[in-house]
Length: 211
Image 1 (cartoon, rainbow, N blue to C red):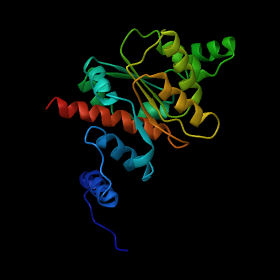
Image 2: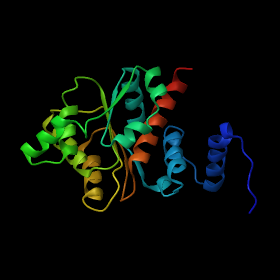
Image 3: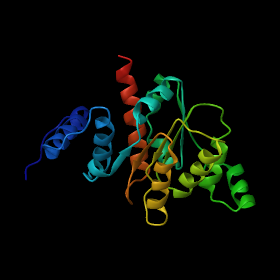
Image 4: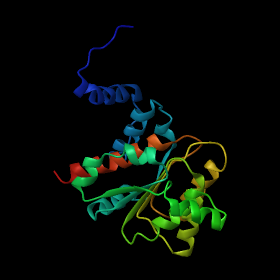
């Protein structure tokens, strides 16, 4: 197999061409295509064509939140680092990760919860439109569902893509059943890179809406 010479600035574009070609006759609705394509691009895993779930009008609701200057909250600093800061700034949005905050550690110990659950509680106090992206902690999704059920915290969108084996599948299905606008990678797959990729796809879609 010969190497393909591609200029650095063209690598992403060429990657998307390859993904399109390998998908073949499998087509995606235009509304969700940029998100699924970016998840595949980030992971080189075509399973995301089949396992991505979108609640009704999830993308439109996310774009509306971005137009209002939403705060993206992640459950890992890796996901936070992966979200495009220039794209956030273009829309007056910010990104936060509370996992390493000293008050989160204290709250988790006092309440007998995980730091991810305590981080959700902190996010509930922001008083701004929130897009919550969980790529690591199913306990974040469980706590979000508890807030949603009680009406104490209603994010504008939840990106539910934690990866792993313990309570991952169950927490994702719980999120779907909550009725909150959500984008979910059903099953065990996901991760911080996927969470960041989905957030970036939404920001880039918002860019296109503004052109």
